[in-house]
Image 1: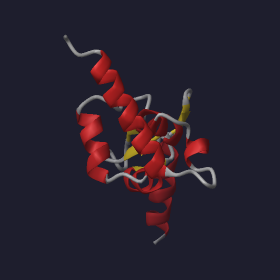
Image 2: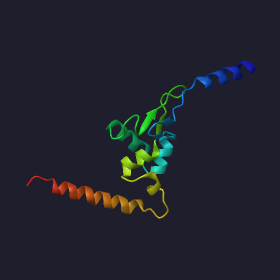
Image 3: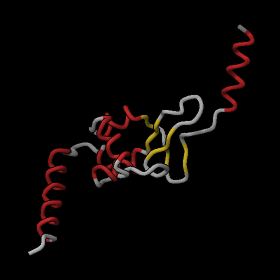
Image 4: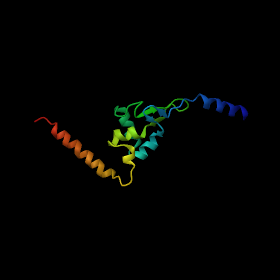
Amino acid sequence: MYKLLKLQEGAAENVPAIKVSPSGKFDFSTAETAKKLKVTDSDLRALRNAKELKAGHHYITGRSPRPTAIWYDLNQTCIQLHGITWTEFNSPGFNLKAHTERRTAQAFDAARRNQKK
């Protein structure tokens, strides 16, 4: 038992810190981020695959012992997804449905203005 504890302590010292970066804190997993931002895990995966979310800016991948883990900067990801900061998104009285409808209307207006005539 003693040897196992010593091995675990030694392994914990060699684990790099993966949750801090110069631009913010990467401290939310995919499931936590999806729940907080009211999207699905597959939406986040699709945005990563489409390069809408950039590695090192919006998220980082884990290192040893969980190399498949993905950690998100909640504020940067919220800005990319919803166009507002996390503090605005999380404020009391924020209406996600109304905000989404406004953004959709703005996108359609922009698309109409840019159509070829």
